[in-house]
Length: 113
Length: 112
View 1 (cartoon, helix red, strand yellow):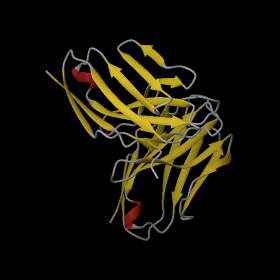
View 2 (cartoon, helix red, strand yellow):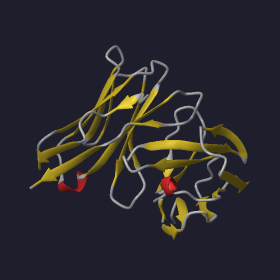
View 3 (cartoon, one colour):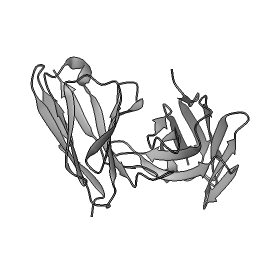
């Protein structure tokens, strides 16, 4: 009955590889997000999709590409991984209405070696 | 350019006492404020929120106070319990943007 689930929980890979993180929500929310928590524990938004359409795209390298096959899923593809991509990536969802809290998944810890 | 700041990285409080976590913001366009609680290896969990038209919101042991003129909000937990030990994030949004801007968190430890 997990509301926002993301896989894998841990991902260890080498520089230059391409990897994907999957996210699914069963809350019936219209809006989904990807956040990145860096080594300083700062949570920063990367992308937001509303009903499969990109609505927020912060300054993120174009090696990162979100894909939303339907409004319950938002996957994150990362090409040509770099050491600096090591972080915890959180998926979240919300109703997308004014003053709607975000509900987060448990995160994917990505380590690039 | 950090628009939401939590200047205390950690706080230790005795069980049964009051915990007060503080947060300051700089963007006057923020009109909705939230507190999230985070345990290790888990995602942030929504705790309580407040709209900018209010100055207080209470939910059980948790109360959030907003001082718009000072651009300051605080979370009060009373009485504090050991299970409250976690990292607490303050967050803010503008109603139209629907994206959260987070502070850097305060680690609360409730001791016996």
